[in-house]
Every structure is written in structure tokens, then in C-alpha cells.
Length: 284
Image (tube, rainbow, N blue to C red):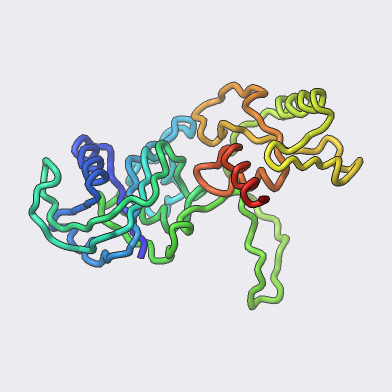
């Protein structure tokens, strides 16, 4: 079973969150006892600490971060921490002092198995909607431990924007596609001129556009058709910028289409060196 709990940035919550993560224990008061009674050994719990609205998005929705389920697409921004715990002791009751403001007697123990670091871009664009909904509900109920029944594995919580659609065969032999639809969404402004400058710089220096990870050269593979073709990866993700910032040629990397998608395959995004190490290891 997969669970999620949201912790606000109130002064006492900030202290309690740090203590709980350091000691591997979490607890709730009597009124939330029912939200932890089903937690068992082996379950996974995501602790999501303090979401903030990005200023670049304009004014936050009324009442943010407590918003209704119908507004789940607006439950997004930066969260300070996401920590995944593996439950080592299911629901139990104890009055042993752990936190300074209350004993929070209804508890479970866990060990940290993954720390997503700090300032993680959060929302349905980046994480499984069931996970986001569980976190949203927990935020609206002041930290109730909330189950995400459709999630079985840790890998299921992430949603990759650039991930291709699942093309595995199913029972459906055909389907209807192609109906025009209109979508309204916010995109990050990009400057095609600097991408061209990067390609021109690399081509002038090396005489080719070779992927910095796997060394693929489209011209070498496809001849004249592939001449001058490559993609540019922003080492500093545009999605994490709160405002327009300068991008230099050093901030861009020449990559092939495959490696570019692999860089964006998971959150947080892999660095060039991390993906290159994976590629070299698999190649050998």
C-alpha cells in the first residue's frame, strides 16, 4: 500500500518534520487515528513538506494550498522536500516523548529509502495524479495520512512529460484518433536563436553535431538528411525558473533525440554525467 502525508511549513510542523525524519517515526493525534490504523509493515509512505506557488504563475488560487479536488491541476508549485519511507513497524500506540509540542500517540516507524532533495517541481505535470490527489487531500485535512490505492510501486508516483505513450498490444485491435481538440496550457518561453548559436559554435569547432552522451552523429548515420540535425538540452531546467533568466551557450548541451528523452525520463532530471555513466555501463 502507498500512503502520502502533507506537512505544512508552520513553525511546529517544521520542527516535527525534522524530528520525525531523523528518528524514523511519525504520529498523529486522536482525531486522525483512523488515518493510520491500516498502515502495515512493508507499506510505502511519501512525506511531502511545504508546497509554495510559483510567482511566475501569477496570483495563487484562492485558499492555496487548500483547494478542492476539481482544482487538482492548481495544486502545483515547488515543494521543499519529498521523502519516501518504507514502513518497518505498522500502526501502534505509544506515549513515549518524541515531539516537543505533543506526544502524537498513534504512530508507525519507517526507514528512508529515497530523498528527492530540495525544491522539487510538483504537480500533475510531473507526478502521478493519484499521488498528487493524495497529497492535496492530506493538505486539506491538516496532515491526514492518505492512501493512493492505484499506486503499487515507488516508480508509479512519477509521471514523465516526455515519456512516449504505451504502445504495447492490448485487447483493443483498433481505435479512433485524429479529432481536433483545443488545449490551453502555459509554456516556458524559449529562444531559438541561442539554440542555433550553440549548434553553429559546436559545428564550427568540431565539424559535426555529435551527442555529448552517446556520440551519435545524425549526418554520419543518415547522410545529407541528417546534416545539422541535433537537439539542445538545457542543463538548468526552464521549468524551475521563476522568471526569465539568461541562458548562455555553456548552459546548453548537444544531444541526440534518444538521450534527450532519457535525460527527462525521471524527476529530478538526470545530469549529463549521470546519463553518460548509465550509458557507458550498459554499453560495456
